[in-house]
Image (cartoon, rainbow, N blue to C red; front, side, top):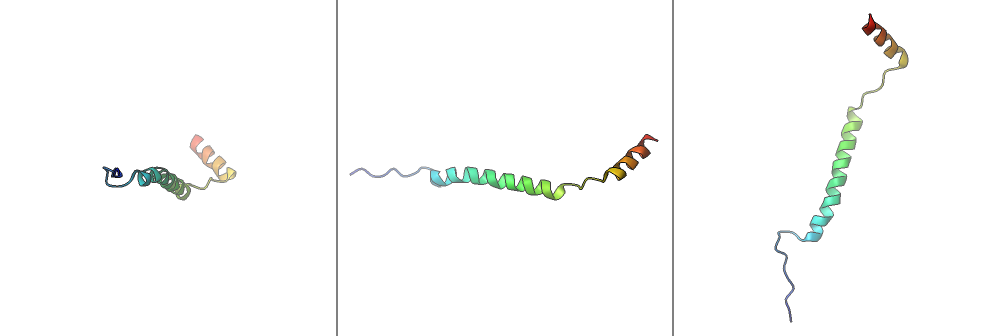
Length: 57
């Protein structure tokens, strides 16, 4: 009876293959939350118009 081949690496390939999409999802989650928390509120149109007029003077 033949013996089952043992993996030569430290962890099985199935775990590595599962970690690839998991890492991608974690990266997307971090980028989304970072952008959401650092987004600035847009100024109302009246304030933006006044600021533009002050810069033109």
